[in-house]
Length: 120
Image (cartoon, rainbow, N blue to C red):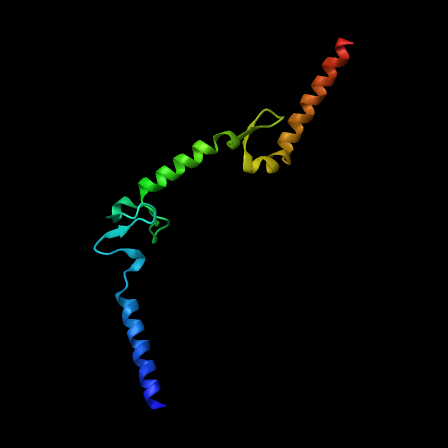
């Protein structure tokens, strides 16, 4: 039994030493490997995620991904509302519920009805 405990302690100690030796955030000698292009680059070529964290992909890969996304989603990005405003697609449902939008649509309908009544 005591031999098993000694072996378990040795394994535990070795695991702790490995954790200490493992580089934090994949940074070794101020260099990091990009997860998209798999090229080892200087840390300055990566953008920060927040104050303490660096992104996993480099700035160039991030720019290419963003450009591709906006190119493919350009049409769905803006929707023309009945009130006359262009609204980003994901916010369209919330926009329709606003008082400003509802009032503008109501005014437009009333003006249209008034014009039709005057024509008759």
